[in-house]
Length: 518
View 1 (cartoon, one colour):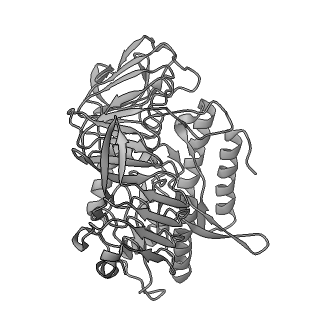
View 2 (cartoon, one colour):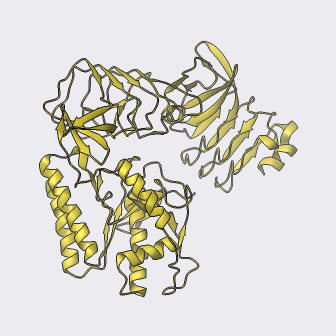
């Protein structure tokens, strides 16, 4: 059972691992986890006991497979996902793309299908679910099959076979988001699987990523100048603020800290301290020497109004800026990763509701074709190019976000909460100006299963790849535009829609459009 006391839950996990090992288990599946950075001292100690239990299990010859977690961010503080001795599994969708919710990081090993998974309920009923909890058992099952075929295999042997029979996804070799990739044994005979993959180069890269990212329990963790820290060889992470922190209206993150007569460069920052919120701080400056901001980094600053981020920052963690008082933010070009609800959201005051609340009329300023612009499109925030030009501006109209592509033209970038019947208009208005809707972006309506009828407006000239891909219930497509040419229609635009879908074309374009769309 699940207790309201997180320490009790972790203790149950520890007992479960130890019981499984004691009773001769070969494989352990752990589709569970929690964030260490939310814990009290007692909970932190419980997580350390869980890590020890898993490491002991692996040393005893048991294979342990764990879920990476569902925050859409780094699993560096997600336990047991961050236990390097375990096999950590993320989730991909049906197109073998990383699921948006799937965690990533230096502990990642493999991915498996975990989006839109069919499950069985009591009484012969079926349901659809998602999560890395559903991806993990698939890898666990493969491990069990390999153990059955090779009873003497230890986890390291099983992992080598998995490496050797994996479809590489993402960047070549191991990477942050897919690990080694998606294991595939479809062409292998049980007992004679390939085991020849040399991952020595991958291990070198993983080691670099681990040193950059990981929160290790064996690192020194002193309090310095009011910051609780974790020290590695040459760098230091601010993991929270301590009770000696001196709060002020204007706060600046230090570029470096000195400890035992040695100066360390600050690389990662979190001000999170559950028991010590600071309401006085309104303005925050993050220097460009800081590499990343952790998940929930500034939850302890609920009164935050203005943030200055500088060129050099690489990533912003999930829910990093959780303040209802912030109305806009400027994002440097160097930022390549922005986590789930990182900007423009604040915590729900209802303790039983974990869904963050959206800040009304939030504005993001940044560079065109950047992570900031992509984040604005996906979350339906206004995006204003930092250079002052209008091209690249993103705004919301109806239930869609639009991106300005020319002085009087826009692209429908993303539908938010698609309706059953949706019309792409001929024009939309923004700041008292009318824009023609001339294109539909790639993936704009992808997998919107509520969508049944779509009408494409008369000014559309271009439709991107997979614009309506996997809209399983899409039955009627009405195209009013006469300006669409085959060269401007992407791949798989209407693939995996309802098999009986009906297309309605303008009379003058019926023959040409039939060749394009079928």
